[in-house]
Length: 515
Image (cartoon, rainbow, N blue to C red; front, side):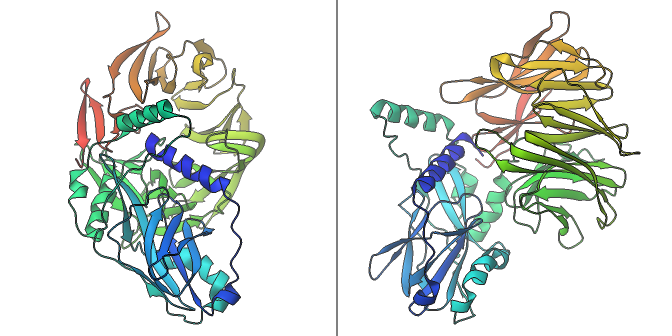
């Protein structure tokens, strides 16, 4: 998700938070003259407003359950009149609402076309019945007609111009915001904007989805890399630099992909499911409760190790929270029938949990100060004495890289004996993206330099003689975030237009584009 999307999401969240909590409708009373309208919003979840065509009265779908919104509406024909801040919604057919009947709109999926154009695509993803089930369970006594009305447009709606609202802080701030928006906006994706069929557009659009940030890909014996993406998509890169997608049948963002010993792919998604590719469709092999979030997965032989976290979300703790319970489970990869808890640790707060298996030892790191080692033969745990707070770590052979990302006050330590002793080294100039040492003298990093409206990324090598870092490449200015390869080298960048570029042979080259 780029900075523009984060800003939009933050504004929507703020506006929703400023509203009073909507009261539950009296379904028993309304069901005699109203029907129930529900829609799924899997990527972004703004307020959805519809207008009764006959009375011109506007309604906002305020009953929210997960990524779905619904509302009891008087019988009649309706038009979508507003999606979040976007009020120029055109090209959708009308929506029919009948008394005592549920109208299922399916999914409306947001896509950024670039060049200040955005679009909401109507699509039936195949999981709508599961998604609207909580609404039906809540209101089934009042739905006299058990046959739902299915809204299923095929024609593409018209794109809308991105909306820039006033900041309320004066003309100068608004002009700065317009400039920042223009710098961060990508070019028009012509391969998408020319498509007229909604289903065909969706099939193309999911190919253009970039990998999700902050993940280490799976790899296989053919040098393929596999990254998780939104909407249940896995991005595959082959050894020649060609990118393709694998569609799973679970429409949920995938944040972790691993390769099992039998060559099949295992993925974890936002629904806290672990899914494995099968002959006809992907199979859910394990499901955690939503409050127990999958943080990382590692494979050793025929065993699968899963790190989970249960915590209270806190806005100022990214990727973590308070009252943090960290657990590790062991599964048998052949059938996933067994689930054995081998580790548990409670912390007052924690963030960014992940692991690394080296020589039958499972290294578990948790910011701000936990680095434990589980012996996978005996399940005995050793707590390593870390010299400083940490935000991240990695292990290669007997080398542990441990660093704390804290701007000008960042710290970097390297151990060449698996954490028994530590040596402090100078850090890259802030802001640190990632650091990895393959030996006490061979380190690679990338750093982030802030510009007026965006950022630049620099790849760096460690100079052991001078205890300093120097740039060896600057990523192209259109890059919006960096991706690592399976060896944790910062090899790829995703651009503002969702293109993918790679660093090879001392230069950056484009590998995937829909412009």
